View (cartoon, rainbow, N blue to C red):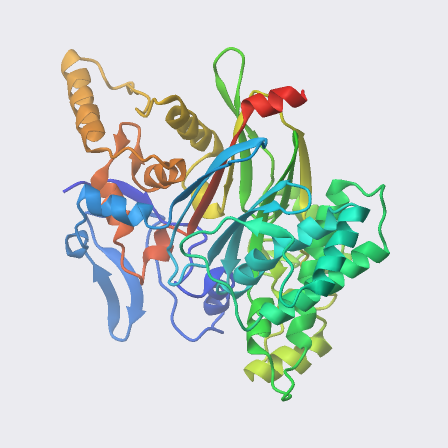
Length: 505
């Protein structure tokens, strides 16, 4: 029985409650007892501590976990993967995408599409918390808001005409469909009306000097405003629209890539991330991060939030690494309990949920924003691919490791690097290492989809390759504890068309 160590997630939460729920439960405001960990790391050959139960703790041993064969593990990993090759001239040659759930149901979402009026490309990863409702609505709507905000005057006029002549929804983006996609039928009419209103306002206030970054910010902030206002609007029968309210009460971090010729823009809210893989002239690969995390580990975010509120609040506006001691991401869609004033929260949230949901020390809202941080990068022929991923990937894997793995996959070299520790002194020691390495590679299944390759390594990777026992264990953790060890993972890797980009240099 293997005795590999698996780190417990430091921001671990109880399944289904998300990043906010853990803190609420720790404060005694939740509906169940939180899981308790005795150590920051555990070994699966020993017992894993679960939730506290009346009369004591419940334990589970690794021997009781389901056993997966390598093929069964591969089937799990590949269940949601997809690959698309562009059949038109574009700076994007192809892209791969995949998701692996930790929450049940998964709270992450993804989207990709081509702007119908410009041909530009959009890709998004959406990491929900407090449920999937916010990530779902943002994934359905944000790309269209961005496409509309970036249209020139003629395109806006054409789109307006299309809206007025259409009996249904006039799309601004042609989407690439993933097998596990779905859309809200109940919200479809509401989404369409809001998008049409936004398009008319963009046309009325059209500014040909507007920068792409400003258009992206406008789209993000306007969608967040619409999500907020829709939650305050009751149904025709006078009842609360709980679908709209759930989308506003839950939250979502977001990273979006906008590809316009050789111009790449990354718009980021929260802690999902983007990194480019650069192939240097000397043959080396370099990771070039294009986003920064909006959390308490980012000093500039702490300064930003403190500067927006009175000095008297500086000791608690970010407390324990969380906004007001509750929320880990410091920018997000939704999460209206950190945006609405107290009066509105009492009228809408407290009434709908029949409880007081106003955070402690809530004096000068809003405390949270969906304003994205924008990074512009001019693509060159050395820029080979872009990785977009939720923090479920970035927690177990460094960005330089992700770039190396994608580069090796791209170059057809899938073997891990060989490491000799200082304690290796004899040929026998080296022989044993090489035997382990050969055994690892013989069991390693090669994935055509590079995002599946990344997830496999994130969960089962070692310096010697893939440890199937480790991978199988991470894929079969009970629902009660899986969130303590891994988060939902969503990845999209975009491969650039080098020849097309070179023609633009």
